[in-house]
Length: 449
Ligand SMILES: Nc1ncnc2c1ncn2[C@@H]1O[C@H](COP(=O)(O)OP(=O)(O)OP(=O)(O)O)[C@@H](O)[C@H]1O
Ligand SMILES: [Mg+2]
Image (cartoon, rainbow, N blue to C red; front, side, top):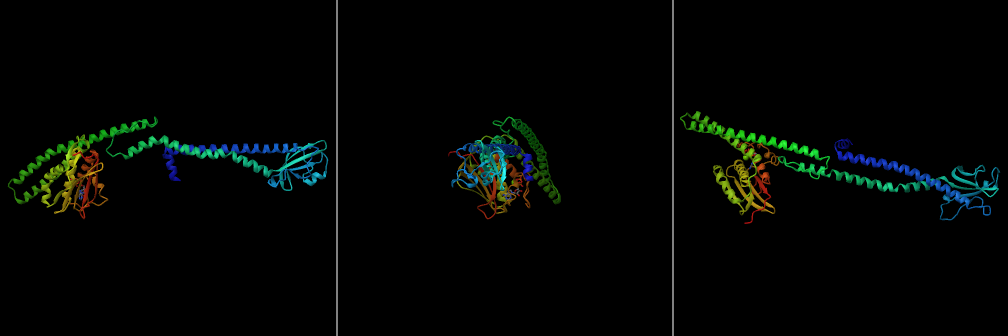
């Protein structure tokens, strides 16, 4: 109940539906009560009229038999039958007919309700000729039952109308709020970097100013993000030149005549400088991946792309005795080549770094019904399923690795692949007992060969 109250407080749609439904039910109940009372009274009045008309059917020539019941046919419920009796004339007491019929002798002319032998009757008394009177009686229980039944029948339209109205209101409210829900679903489905303004066409006038305000906010957020990315790129760029100079100086120092102890320290210094240069390079690539406009698409041979990559990375693989192979036939991919190459370079570099010496790395490009997949699979330790999403966060590094890195490689891959309209997924290796399989899915169709 608490949950419903909280939802009621926070949901405009729920609040509108709830109060409209409550109003319909309240109006229906009030309407039913009034209509029941009116029909009940009307039905009783009709039965009074019927008593009068029945009395009028008798005259002095054809008085009813004492204590007779009108139309004592077997198909009429004996309880429901009218009782008719001839009474003594006004002010005359002890008429044998009236006594035997059980009617009290003090009945007055007109309509009245009396209890006779424990049962309540509605009785109409009228003069029959000059000396006699006639009484037509009907048990009130039967009258009330008949009137109640008629009144209940009168409620039928309400009973049918109310559920129909409730459904109509619920449907209408859902329909009225559909554009708002659609806008919310659109925002929900967006990637965190998609700061395009929301469409305002088709939105109700009351909601449009709100969406326009959100769009202005999105523009401000996009501007601020672009400024931050420009700042990171500029800072990384500015820091790179002094670091390169420092690295050169350290290289010169290394070749100068020094004792072994000093030479060892200079080597440690050079490693530190190189690590920072690599970090700055990754930072610069990451900042550019987020802010630079996408490069135009071109048709690329997957195997050419692999060959160029391996020419760069093979020396690194050879130092660890890692065997890198290309599987499957070549296919043509329509894509932004620079983005795809940078992403693949990071994936293959990871495979080389995290696979122990003498491991295997397989590269493959394969067509899919609506695009291509490019996979990089290694025989390394692989990644725990819980870590497979986290490694895409900037600066996240796997636990227990002694490989030097900045934790930006996979963030760069994800940013670039999403920018060229693709998807990147990590899973277990399928060709090796252990290892990681990185799959890039591009929706572009392979070019006709
Ligand atoms: N092929 C792989 N096998 C096992 N673990 C991997 C593999 N590739 C990535 N990882 C894990 O994912 C983490 C993040 O990788 P990512 O490439 O983003 O950063 P990095 O390699 O640490 O640094 P760099 O920015 O220099 O690439 C790594 O620290 C590593 O733990
Ligand atoms: Mg990496």
